[in-house]
Length: 426
Image 1: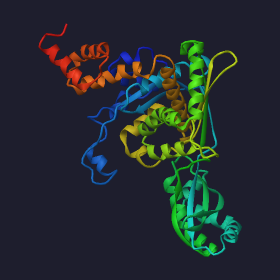
Image 2: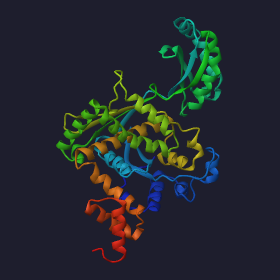
Image 3: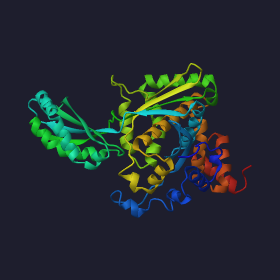
Image 4: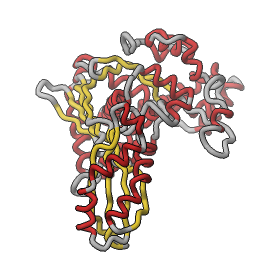
């Protein structure tokens, strides 16, 4: 892990200088980060082995979030995102936690569930009990499918059964609860579900249909908390405004959807950079935002502490892994894991959720202070200028004029470029 994730002036360096700095801070060789260069990163040939019908690869910017302390450990965090201000906001918000020890994160363990759907059961309530009576047999059959997982301390841990009324009749749904260790777990639990489905159907006296994991990973919860410094935030008024904004998101699903999107800006960026399944994580988080009353609400909460600082908390499912899938097959994902220096899937999940809370705070602060557009549009202006065709030498001039004119549009950038090139821009 890096000696310190605090790197003043990091944003002023060139991409090559940043890679060298990251290598130096993490103890990696400079060549270890070569995969982050598109010329030496994921090749079309490698991509052709990852998915079907490959015609090319899509480049996504990878930035490094600095200032991150999680459970007293320092991290430099790779984030893959196309959205301006996300990496900067996460870094800046993390800086505001440092006087108070950074982020403190806990977890419930790397547990996933497989579902087996049983149809045409004549006595569903009795079938439920028959299946539960065969619990040890079902767990033994499940674990026989993945002796390697069992060897590393994981495996099927429990069996639950539900009787579920649906519009096509009553279904019996069995859940196998599995400790998946350092894997995301989809392959392991799917294999177990398929292997035990015939036996469950025989016990129930029905037929199996779906045999697959659930992405509602409510037994794989990660909880993060942090105190954000009042003075670094901008004072007591900003703290109070963020608390009011948080209350709005908790009470209103329209605000909660965008509030939670801000959390996912941070979470999904780290999940993607490390080669994990963004769709699975997003599905799990958004399902978790629906409470027992069926209402969609905010995943995070902000409160004012007794000494006037801002306390932030976030609790979400986090199904990510270090083994299998793109985490091993994608060269950038492997490099991202090396930069992080994490040694378990749980540690990776802890860092991801901390960054999600940081990014959420950054967005709430912008909304509650100067407004989201001022900071976001400053960075967006660079994207617009590049889209309009600005060269490296022209970029700063075009960006400054876009911001000054308060018109950050491609057509306006094209006009500015025309004026700049014919000498009429003053």
